[in-house]
Amino acid sequence: MATIKELSEKKPWLNWVLFFGTVVIVFLIGLFAASIVERRSEAQLYFQMVQPIPEWEPRLEVWGQNFPRQYESYMMTQDTTFESRYYGSVMIDYLEKYPELVIMWAGYAFARDYNQGRGHYYSVTDVHNTLRTVQPQPATCWTCKSTDVPRVMNEIGVAEFYSHSWREMGSEIVNPIGCQDCHDPETMNLRITRPALAEAFERQGRNIENATHQEMRSLVCAQCHVEYYFRGEKNYLTFPWDRGFSADDMEEYFDYHEFTDWVHGLSRAPMLKAQHPDYELYKTGIHAERGVSCADCHMPYQREGGLKFTNHHLQSPLNNIAGSCQVCHRESEETLRQNVYDRQSRISELRGITEQNLARTHLEAKAAWDAGATEEEMEEVLQLIRHAQWRWDWVAAANSMGFHSPNEALRVLGTSIQKSQEARVHLARIFSRYGIEQPLQLPDFSTREKAQEIVGLDMDEIRAQKADFKENVLPDWLEEARRREAAYDRP
Image 1 (cartoon, one colour):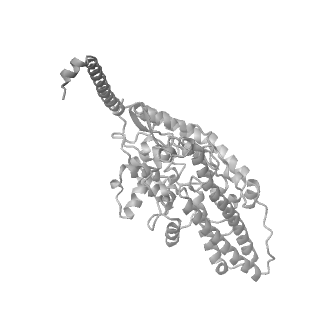
Image 2: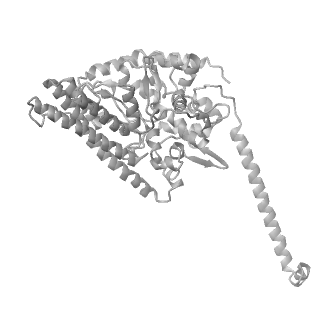
Image 3: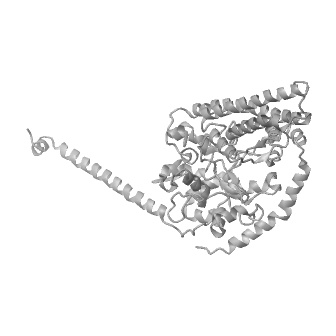
């Protein structure tokens, strides 16, 4: 076999091939080494604090000095122009769009005002603006609205915070949802800042400190995007998970504890109001089963140079299909969007049937009371109404029009329709007993204004009270907050 020397003597051009080949290899190795050094430098720069962040620092701009990419992407939540077929961030007046909701919430503050949430940046502003806060509310209502909440809880105690009124805490709660709600300011690790979640885990015999990072990418959302209620006279925030996460489990929990959010103004049913059980509905769906977190879809990872960071523009994945859905799914954007809409449309159809049934059932129950029905005759009717509306609300109050778990959403809505129909069958028997002609002539609730008149709301007076609050109370809150923040020791 010929040696390299012999080959080079016979083929002198081979020396040049070896020379240039060696140069290319050395050059590529150099590029690779330089890339490694550059990426390490970027990583060090990324995690190097411009200035330390104090514990319980509520202001977004202070965190933004250290983490400009996350801050800039979070500030994009100010944009409320995206609207999908059913949700998005655009403002929607749901009572105008679905006036039957006014009948369903008669006697409850939601009959006054219920709008599509505009996003985390507006969490405090929208609470200032809503007509629901005209009537007295506990400070517990502030719990999920602001980075100031953990700060105040740390200062005065958790139970003490809950025991105050909404107005008493108003000047303290000014910064919207943000960095401090989910991150440790020293390590940037995800952490739980709202005790109700950890307490719910503890009652289930679980330690939230043992959660993995991927689980935490959902659990920080589950601090607020859950079902909860205010327990006892001190309005202690509590998650009703002791029997499980399903609508049926929580219904059983509330019945066992004989808890009622309010007594309906027309039917007199002891009602339950769902908040936003996104986490619970998600837990029954395929994404949770596959280990996909909330952040994977709503705050997907993003690369910039050698940096990988979480995009903090919390939004519908439908406004970022390439960055969220297509990370796992290889179909086109249009196909994936239509897949979502197909499932949501089926759920929307059942929701509409459920809402019409419930509104009529409340009005028919009032007619039965007016005819002289007894509490004994109405007992089963009221329980069926309570359960039917709870199950509807468990789906309706969650974001995504049921897409977080379409199969479970359809199942729960189906049981809601079944229970409301059972209630109407009982009512039909009561009407026959009292000689009431059927079908009943129900009042027209085809518009928000007509429905609010039926339930006895003086909306002019309520709006006047809100205007007085914004003119004479809110400015003092904001001025006091500015004075307090100006006195903070800058790190």
